[in-house]
Image (cartoon, rainbow, N blue to C red; front, side, top):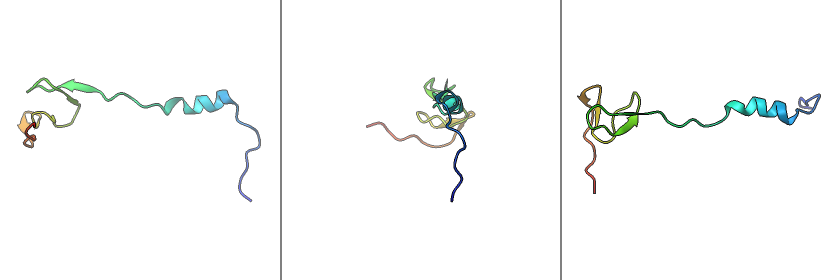
Length: 62
């Protein structure tokens, strides 16, 4: 037989455990080149630069 709980876990205790399970909004910063919002520590998807260097060429907008 598998392990079974000795006592029922109350809704308050269950909620306390799950209090950290929420999703966070991604933190956006302005790109120094094009001023578009981008994720911190990521290359800019709009202009393709990271830390002052051209990392990739962005796709042309249709």
